Length: 350
View 1 (cartoon, rainbow, N blue to C red):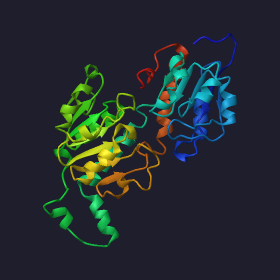
View 2 (cartoon, rainbow, N blue to C red):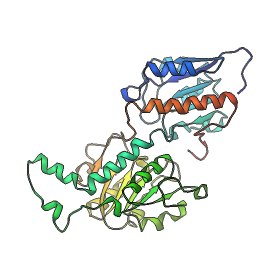
View 3 (tube, rainbow, N blue to C red):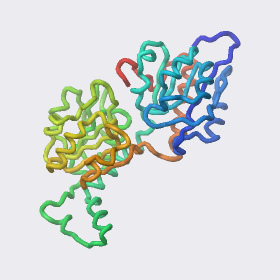
View 4 (cartoon, rainbow, N blue to C red):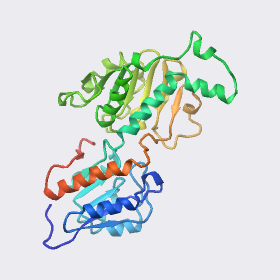
């Protein structure tokens, strides 16, 4: 990327998250400074920021001042106020995988490069998916309820309406056969499950863990055969309300719904109705249409729902090493004018 001869090129890092899990420690700054290409300066914003969603609606005064000189910016997404203050900006890297909040009109229309962290969170998210499914399929939600009552009762497990089943007997449909989806499929396949992926461009091949993939046009037909449907696709105009009442009705009786993507991919009232009526075996939900999930939501009270508060990507001690490996490699590529990894198609939305 061109810059004035002799001018210092600035990377602004605005990642001092309020959540300790996402906050960079001293080793992150040391690594970035040691990895800086010649002519680059690293500026670490010390003011706290928010890692949830697409970052804070209002950036700190320190971040606004720092980004004025930035050619590159590393943060949890980017907001219009920051973007407007950054007249020299050429590249934004989001420490999050989802970038919908960063795709405001000015960003989309600009020639600023946007990369995301797709794949960084894939392993912990996949383990959450498998853990949630086993929790329900092996009746651990029933065991937990009995434990609270100090009651020894085998009837819920061995009766005619026992919910117990084996993951290896299931047909698993993963909507979004990218990094997260592939890690889910690898683990589900290790249990013996047969995994099918839905991806926008099936001609790109069959990722690890899947027996086959199909395009979005095949979704309805594949839902008919799915014992488990896992949503791991990005939130775009095309995926909004993807799993609505009509599609939920296509699933076989007793099927499970898992959502670790974004809450907006599911019609929540329709999901609640299907669970209440017993048409579904259960749901594993890490994301919701509105977060935090309201205390009055009926999802809290449904016994066959496993709820986590949007924490499936959490992996203390592993996030920043994975993040730095991606970012430093991309920094080198950017310096050399080579193609960047995880480059977002700003018009497609991912």
